Image 1 (tube, one colour):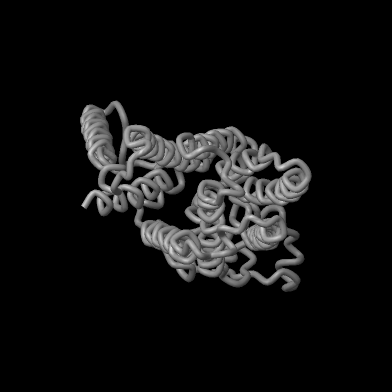
Image 2: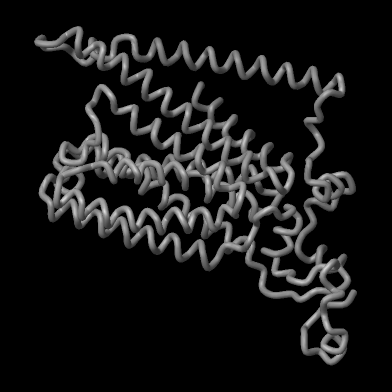
Amino acid sequence: MSYVAHSLTFVAGYGFLHTISSKGSRSLMISGCCSCYLLGIASAVSLIGGTYVKNLEQYAGQEATTEQLIDGIYVNFAATYLSIAIVMLAILIGLKVLHVLGTVDMTNSLDNDLRIANANGSIFESRADVIKRLQFFYVIKNQQWHVTLLLLFVEAIQYALFIYLVFWFALNDAMRLDELAHIDSMFWVIFAGSVLAIVCLCFYSAKVHFVTTQLLLLLLTVLAMIIYSATSSKVTFWLLLVLFGMGYSSLQIVLLEVTHLRFTECIIFVSYTLKLVSTSIVYYYFVANVNNSYFYAKDESTLIAQGFVYMIITSLLALVVGMKVPRTHRSKLLDIQHEVYGIIFMKHQIEQLNVRWLNDGTIPTINQ
């Protein structure tokens, strides 16, 4: 029941932030939401890991059962979950009271065009209706669903890589970055990277940010393999975790921006489901299979082979996003919708066109 509530909160939270934010703060808000999510994961790992290590120390030198080793974990976790739920409920009630008093506005978007479109009912217009309403423009093929489905696939693959390497760095004896008692430090480093991403997104788009972090991951992976082979040092792998955190929110931001406004919550749900599927596949195929010689390998050649596979997949993801995803930085949601619809020249740009080109048909247009 708590996980169903978590899922509903996840979908509703991203959907609300996406539509209520202004064009300048939208990517920052969603990135901050992802950062808070990673903060929760890091806190949960610290809570569970701390109790588990405490039980290990208590039963040191004894043959402890599984029930003894996990004693107190679920009680502490449930108490924390309940406390967070109570705090969230109190905040929501407080916001509702402030909304009734007129101090805050929880219904109108900070994106002026989106608010007007919502008021007059044109927010859910189809592409054909938009084409009929606009006077002059240059129309190409509709790319919205193509880009949306492509991003869903890319996000699932990228998240699977993220989960795989987190498990790998935590469970593989050859690649373990820290002792079991301090394994939560990995997640705090990832969270720190996500906070750094908020600062970066103040200056450039989520698309550029994702491609940049992927290219840096390629470079650091090469350096990590060289340094690890020569000195067995794992410092570079910690920097990889920082980049994981920096790139965590990028695809989520772009996916929400290019998605049709009518199906925003549905796409968030599909994205969330694909993340669960990615986690399940990685866990059951690699982690749960203790005889998996590829995941639990300790020999240097297999470790380097995994690094090359990771580099190939990462480079392909960066290439696909860089080529297919449109520019969305500080753009209004309706302008992004028109761009992925394939409507290139909007009303405010028509004055820049040569009228002779329009008249002789050099530039194909549609005139109502």
